[in-house]
Length: 237
Image 1 (cartoon, rainbow, N blue to C red):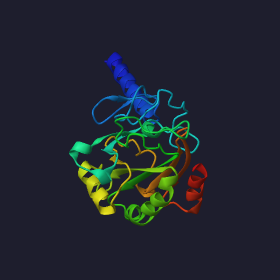
Image 2 (cartoon, rainbow, N blue to C red; image 1 turned 90 degrees about the horizontal axis):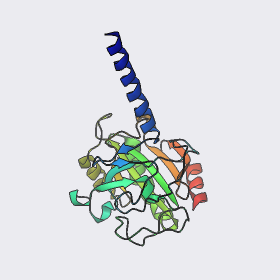
Image 3 (tube, rainbow, N blue to C red; image 1 turned 180 degrees about the vertical axis):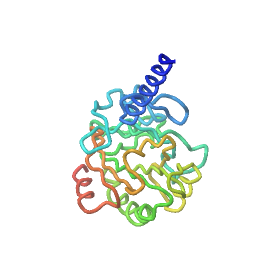
Image 4 (cartoon, rainbow, N blue to C red; image 1 turned 90 degrees about the vertical axis):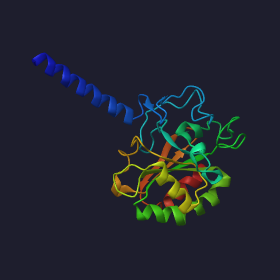
């Protein structure tokens, strides 16, 4: 019995280590289809989105100065062109990696073959129940996307919760959000709660600026962005 107890304790410890490493992007996680997603992607990740063989080294993390892991979010690459079951795909953060600063998306990319890759990626984390998230989606993001999109900004919105706090968002929730705010930038959900350790409920909306030439995080804030956030974004563009 003592030996069995030691084995159980060892398995629990190993499981805890695996969970921590996965949250940091140091080992493979899985996509919605069950396929492994590696922090250092091999080949074309995200359905031809252009995930490079030489995805930047870590340290991986979710704080300013860290390299963002190659997260995967099931969703829509261009929801304005269709947000139905046939358009659903896995969106990888590595899809937006643009080491030269002037890369374009490959043939067959859901983001548009030959379309310029972004110079900066804004990751927006929101929830259906969150009032400030809705205000940002309605009044802030469309204006900033219209202003900075032509200069190299891409926005990736991830809906983490549905109408109730702590209840993970579904595709139905995502489509409600897309319709309500006429979203025309990539949008997905987070069924594995990958961002749960980054932004808790009191932090929504969460916003992150990523330099796509390095995939390094430039800024992370809780709440709607202020002037300093947009100035840092403009510096990348």
